[in-house]
Every structure is written in structure tokens, then in C-alpha cells.
Length: 336
Ligand code: TYM
Image (cartoon, rainbow, N blue to C red; front, side, top):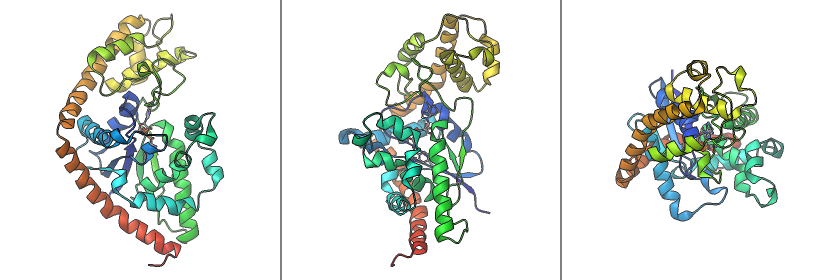
């Protein structure tokens, strides 16, 4: 039997943050030890959909690769590559656009959030982004996609597109594998440090809302110290978190970093003051994140080594993706 295959990716827009790490990257590191072939890409084509700076795109792409390796992804075991180095993604996307009704795209909450009130000014790229994401996954026939909770809707769309293709062009056979989302761990949706009702995000204007993987110990301490809480002591259970989104978020972050359950952490710190809890959280975050940051800086000083990893990854990714697009076109009746 062929190995199960994992594909996932992150956008090279801004620095990676704690949400990316706890919601996705850390899980990838664990999954590479299991019985999967793993492919992880820097989704640079996605990064241009909402305006980007050409002067930093390549560097940001290398930074994503460096973050993967620094966090523990083994480039000898996994394929690490840049999305734009595999043209099959965009070719397959175009084929998929013809079987994606606008109604499906109109449901996508991430587009609504990112486009905001100026919907008419949003790019076609931003709107059609989930179709490219479906192509990213289906072009490798990935069976599993480890992501944070915010990507669940996009995964559902990828499954719908795969099903539609199989029905229309492959006589209902499983030409495209229907990918399973893997939403793992305690921190599937890390929230902003300043507002427990909005997601920690690369694009939030204030840097104080997130912990970046490049933040040093002082900055991490400062950000947690200033993180919003309330006047009550630390909650001792999930039930005590009602209407206390910020407190819940900080406990969730601690639990994920410590590899403990939410309940264990709530039992440990429940009833104590937030001052003490925030100190413990800072120490833990610094202990877990600073080795990644320093390894990342080290890697970024050796551009040639990162490029070597990305070249090797692109070679393997192209080898897998090209025949899938060829066969897709054949099934759709193209001249060859
Ligand atoms: P991106 O770059 O926004 O995020 C990368 C990964 O981090 C997760 N994540 C979070 N998890 C928990 N809490 C948060 N606050 C948080 N913020 C982000 C995301 O769920 C994601 O797993 N569309 C994707 C990139 C993509 C992709 C793909 C992913 C493109 N093609 C194919 C998987 C497979 C995105 O914008 O992720």
C-alpha cells in the first residue's frame, strides 16, 4: 500500500507567529515521525493576493523554509518547497475554476474578513484563493492536511472540488483523493493577545496582538505582560471561562506549549493572580521559542543552504505533481 501523504503550507506574509506554530507547525514536526510522506510548502502565490512587496517576497519565502527547519522539520525526510516553483499548482487551479460555482466561493468567511467592506476592490486572486489551495492539496493527492481551525472551510471546499471532478470526469472513481483535515492539539485557534474574540493574525496592525517566532525574550515578556486579562483570578476550569475569552486564550497557549491539557493547566493555576501566571507563561514561551528563533537566525545567515533545500524540494514536488496534471487534462479531454 502506498504511504499516506501530508501536504500543508504557510504564507510568506510577515513573520510566523505563535498561532502558526501551535496550530500547525508543531503538529507537522510530530507527524513527520509517523507513517506519512510529508510535503510542506511556502505558499508564495497566496502571499500576493492582498498586496505584497516584491523586494521582500523571496526573503520571506526563505524565512518560511528556515522556520520549518528551525522548528524541527527534517529536510532529509520531508519535502520543503516554494509553491511558485511548481507550476502544476496554478495549472490545476485553472482547470478547477471551471467546476467551482461562485456560490461556494461566496461562502468563504476568510475572503469576507480579508476583503472587509471594500469587497469590490479586493483582487480576483483573493477571491479565488481557495481554488488554488484546493489545487495545492489535490495535485499531490494528499490524504491529510494538518492546519489550524481557520482553514477548515477551505478544506471542505477542496473536498467538494475533488468530488465534483471525480463525478464529472472520472466516472466516480477516486481520481482525486478527498483530503482529511487534521486539526490537532489544544491550540487550534490561538486568539489575539489584545482581543480574545479575534484570531491571532499576521495581518493585524498591532504587533502587540501576537508573539512572533522572531521575538526575543524581552519582547515576549512585554507582550504577555500587556496581554489583556480581567480583574478576576485565573479560571480553574473551562466552565469558569465563560465571557473570559482572553483568560481562556492564555491558558490554551500555556497548555499547548507545555504539552498539557487545558484542564491540567487550569487546575494548576486556577485561583492565582494573572501576574504569576503571566510570568510562568513567559518563561515557558521563552524556553520553547528562543531555540527556534536562534536556529532560524542561523539558517537565514546561510541563504545557499536554504536554497539547496528548496531546490531539492521543488524537484520532488514537480516529480509528483506533473503527472497528476497531465492525467487530469487527459480526463478532461484536452489535446495532447
Ligand atoms: P496561514 O499562512 O494563514 O497560516 C498557516 C497555518 O497556521 C494556522 N494558523 C493558526 N492556527 C491557530 N491559531 C491561529 N491564530 C492561526 N493562524 C494561522 C493556519 O490554520 C495554517 O494551518 N490558506 C493557508 C495556506 C495554504 C495551505 C494550502 C494550507 C495554502 N495552500 C494547502 C494547507 C494546505 C493560510 O493562509 O495559512
